[in-house]
Amino acid sequence: MLHWIVIFLGIALVAGLLGFRGVAATAFGIAEVLIWIIVVLIVVLVVGVLAAGII
Image (cartoon, rainbow, N blue to C red; front, side, top):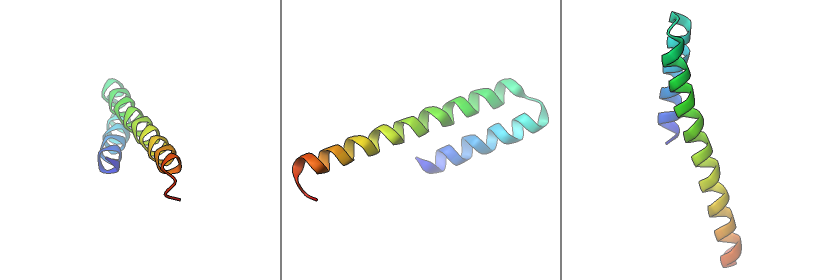
């Protein structure tokens, strides 16, 4: 999933430099959503591991 974030941020950067602000905003929005999904997954996994008593 990090690979997709880098791709969408790259698209946003290039589109922004070329003046395609709508495409840049959309690509950045998708990257932002993916980042939040990763953060939520990490928190859920950490809570699950701590609740299971593995660590």
